[in-house]
Image: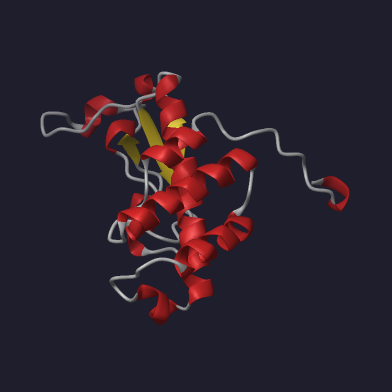
Length: 175
């Protein structure tokens, strides 16, 4: 924002709250139902109020303090680090799912995977960078701390690959 002032929050991205309620990342799937429900509620509230991961982390910390932790992840990572990881991952999950829902609502069937290029980018995300995927089969974020995003691609620019299609007949088409 200009002049050091934060831009005003104009409301959650269309579908973000519904996406939060319907989805939970694989990172918290092994936890108890009560904890998962709390995190989904916290993520939905964070999306609705325009909270970032730091603000959401406080709510996740409270949820973690009362959670069972059957896999012993919190003692290994530490309470603060695990809360930060969950907050970032769940918010990324909420907004990525909202983007997929919005793109589908707008008639898009495909999206291009865009990885953040740095030394911290994992091999899976590097391999997906620039590739086009059907929205219905797209799983993003790919993992906790994933920094990838997607961009919609018009269907007429995509020709799905199959063995019968030769590259010579696809000039001008994106894969």
